[in-house]
Image 1 (cartoon, one colour):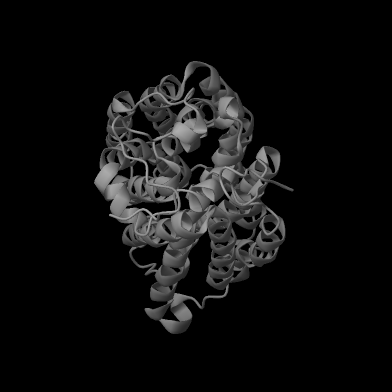
Image 2 (cartoon, helix red, strand yellow):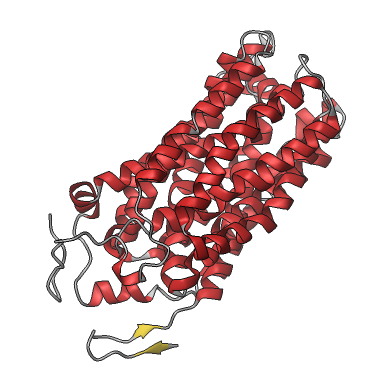
Length: 453
């Protein structure tokens, strides 16, 4: 249904906070199911399937590096998809990213192995991983923008948290999908078993279209396009007027290092010969931590609507710097109850404080006309650092892969840029949606004019 505002031109869509949040949740869950099954496979399967088994340490390093390749592709995808999203709207990007992710992930499951086609196998794997990264670059920024711009002003933190809550659900589903696969006999696991979770992703392409095609474009974007006009070159406007906030988002987004090291490197370390913990048991640690996060994320988000974004984000960033090293120490002891308890604490509770409120915290730094571009470029650049942190962690761990203390120090140090960046950011929790991203003295474009540079 739409409403007509004669002062602003054409009829505008009503806000759809619940529908937008649901579309963001389901879409992100489907999208990141695809993205995260790659992480489990990179840690457990791909070193043996796509790389040279005669050098296990190097094969693992190369496999984990392919995990980071998608993060390197994300800033490139953010430049393109951010530009298009701020020109034509959030909805079209949300549908496109789901279809791209579903198809590229399905094709990974169809790839021949190194034994079958030699060096071409890892090359094809990297190309498809790049497509995954481009898709992920636009997914969260468009879904966050959509849910934030539909949300009531006093509940933006809560409604935008559904995007990241869906991401955690996707990671949970991906982990659960790999638990029975990891329990298969080695021969079946390496021949066909690992492919099944990837094949299931074809449902993403179909489901994504059905879910998101009926969602209305956001009222503030529609109003912007109808009155002031969209930016002709959103990237130019962003870098001219909002470069400092882009850098803040980059710095804050590095906190995702906690997620990538927890999800990928810690799993690889725990199941290596250095520790010898079981694959299935460690996958359950991730699954239960994600399950707890599904409940803590909206709670942290609701708290941020009351006390502000910065305090909650800082709790997550500073807390992660403290408890993440404890989790890696627990793995080094081989004590499963200790690993399980600290895993749930670090990822399910503490990290969720920062993870649950960044969709609103980052998005509120930018005005409507460059919000998707600002979020996409800032987050994906920071996430690229987080993605390659896994490969750096493998190098820090040394040839035997057992220098967990060095990796713990590395993970804690990478929580410092998010803390500094958050401390320099403005508090926006109680700013009206239409005034987000405004600067004192900033000139508003005249009605009917596109924003130039």
